[in-house]
Every structure is written in structure tokens, then in C-alpha cells.
Amino acid sequence: MTGGPVITVVGSFAVGLTMRAPKLPVFGETMFGREFDMGPGGKGSNQAVAAARLGADAALVAVVGRDQLAEVGHALWRADGVDATHVRVDDARATGAGFIILNEAGDNFILLDMGANEAMDAARVDAAEDRIARSDVVATVLEIPMAAAARAMALGRRHGARTILNPAPAAPVPADVLPNVDYMTPNESELRILLGLRPDDPRSSRELARELRARGVSNVVVTLGGRGALVLTEEGETTVEALPLSPVDTTGAGDAFNAGFATALAEGRPLMDAVRMGVACGGHACTALGVIPALPDRAQADAFLSNVPQPRRSR
Image 1 (cartoon, one colour):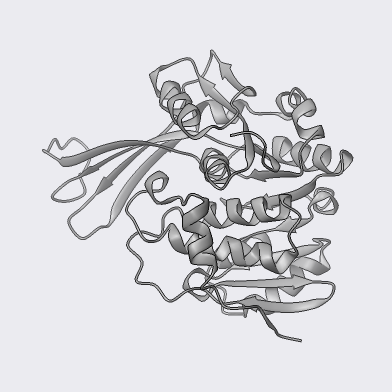
Image 2 (image 1 turned 120 degrees about the horizontal axis):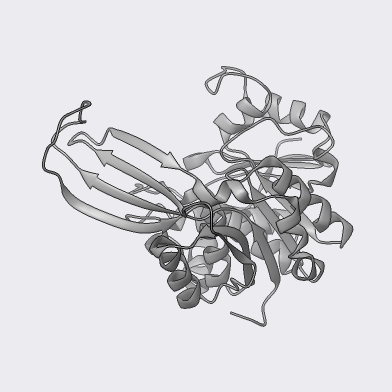
């Protein structure tokens, strides 16, 4: 889709292949499964698709292999109007893929090969600089090498875009990257891992978010799942509560939040309005099975947004 606010996501694409089995297998065992499903994923692709559905002029900068799984991505991006001009092909690696086996209780066994995503580097980000230069928001994730994510933030900052780093999956972020990040959007376990702690560290997320800001992140937006989001800026601390829901599937909620947040920022909305849009989109993503089917269009997002509580200032 064109004509909306310009968002560029430097990130990942992978295809998930899921099957349900009576139990998790052991090595050497062959069994029959059921309910096979194959669908597009990767946090970068998910966020670009979600932003496009909300009306943004969204582009994805990514790397895929020269194979049939890459066509799954291209079909999705065509259908949802994502600009894939800067999705490059790596002939030496396969498109990212994940194999997920679920048992009857819902426990899973996952084998993931990020494949061509590992070929993303600073040079490939530089090749998209013309797109980044005209972006309102540049966003990235950590399913690609840190050098590429860091370059995305640096180029976004150079060209005056607002920059968002969604540190998922969490990994140490070099100190020299942080000044180029306008908004860091970890969930609670990612927040802890970023600080070198166990993902279940008992200290409060508010305390830990303050520590992350002290390390140089301008604005920290911690997603709290069913409790909404915690926002820390130089002006203070604010909580945005989530809608009361009975989640069906929370898998894509983080990607939906980041897309809604990025789109509202790109539209020039105030920070707290952008967080409320993120909360609305994240909530909607919990109402249906699967990531892509649950990402809202603009009308659906606005309907949820109308019921998101107003922000509550902590101090």
C-alpha cells in the first residue's frame, strides 16, 4: 500500500511448518501426525505486513533463499502491499524455516534454521539507504545479525527517521548502538536478558526499565502482555492498560504491537497515542489462531483502540 506514512522494517523472514503428534518423538522414531500447517513468519516480515494492513507504506529489507519457501513470502507481500524491493536473494543459503511439533497437551519441539537471514549484513542495509532516507520510521529486530540491526538504527538516525529496536529474540546490544535507538520495545523477559539477567529475575520491570534507560536508551516501552505496556521517558513513567480479553493465541501479539506503535508514530501521533495503538493491535492479534490471520486492518485496530484505557501517569 502506498500513500500512508513511510515505514521500513529491516528484519527477518521464515516459514513455519507445524504438525501435531500424539507425543513428542525421540530420535529414530517414526510416527503419524496430523493438522499440518505451513505459514509465513519472521518478526520483520510480520511487522511489515501488520504495518501495511494499518495503512502504512511499508517496506521490508530482508534476505531469502532461491527456493519455494521464498515464494511464500513474496505471495504474502504482494497480497498485503508490502514493498519487497529490498528483499534480496542469497544463493548459498535456504530461506529461514522452522519445524514445530506439538503434542496433545500443546507442548512443543522446535527446530529453527534462520538460513538466509544470517546473510543480512550492514552492506545489505546500506543498499536500502534510499528507502531508509525517506522513511518516517525505521524499525528492526534481532532475528538478524546485530551488525545489520545496528546499521539500520544508524542510517535511520542519520536521515532523521524515528528508530525502533524490538530486541526479539533478546541478545546483548552493544553500547554504541543505544544512542541511535529512539524507542526500545522489549517484553518483560527480553528486558531482563538485555540487562544480563535471567529471564525470570524477580526484580520489577519498572526498576529494570529505569536501568535500561540509564544505559542510554532514550525511551523504553515494555510490553506487559495482558497488562498492557509500561512507558519510561525523560518525562516520567506511564502505564497503558490492555483490553480485558480471553486470548486464543498470543503468538503474534508482540509483532502486532510494534507495527501499531510504529504506524502511529509515523503518522505523527503523540507517544502515548502510539502506545495505545500498539496495545490495541496486540490485543487484536490474540483473538484468532495464527499470526498473519490475526493481524488487524485499520478498521479493526481503530475499533479496539476506542476501548483501550487512557494512559495512567505513574509519576
